Image 1 (cartoon, rainbow, N blue to C red):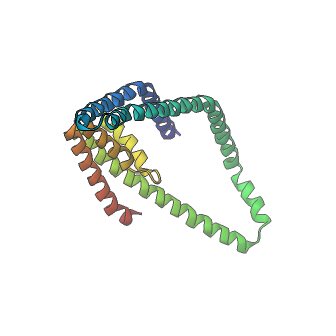
Image 2 (image 1 turned 90 degrees about the vertical axis):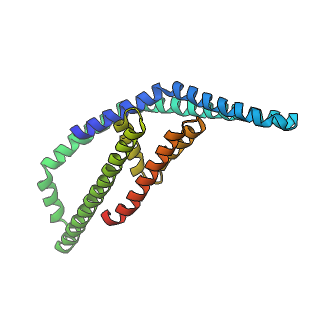
Image 3 (image 1 turned 120 degrees about the horizontal axis):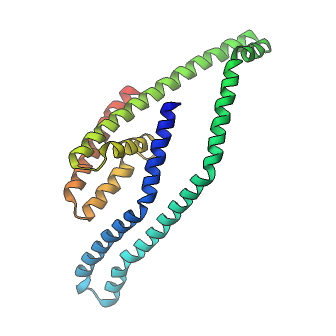
Length: 226
């Protein structure tokens, strides 16, 4: 419970910090797109005026759409968190209390169930329970090991390339990495692209190397561990 509580507070604090810093991120994106717009303007001087005008206004249009979508998502997320937090807290409290009462009467409840089920069915259910719990535990332990390895790699890599708060950032990326479909690339690849566009070539190269190392190690270890 202490570990889960700490993890919940950690995630909440990071999410709150991200939402609070959203205007800064939007300003950064605006500066990046402004730089791209300036470079496009230099390249478009030789095109016909109508085509050049359409291309020059494209980054501003994209930026406006991106800003509107991001603002709407952040506003919706903040509203959902504020609205559902009390219900979530009450649900957790009720679940913990109910689980304690069920655990207290576990033997009584199981004796009642066994009494009304045949011995053959009881044996099958017990075997299924044993196999299921062992398999789930091993699977969770395996993925936790992979996540810790990824976290260590990212922490070292981010520290080397000079990322602020490398351990915290690595923890967030490692958590995203363990989620289905997403993975480390969902964070590192866009980050590298933005760094490259903004002129921070060494940061982009460093992120690319970190991503390659993480993917290679993950593809090598996952079949063996899982």
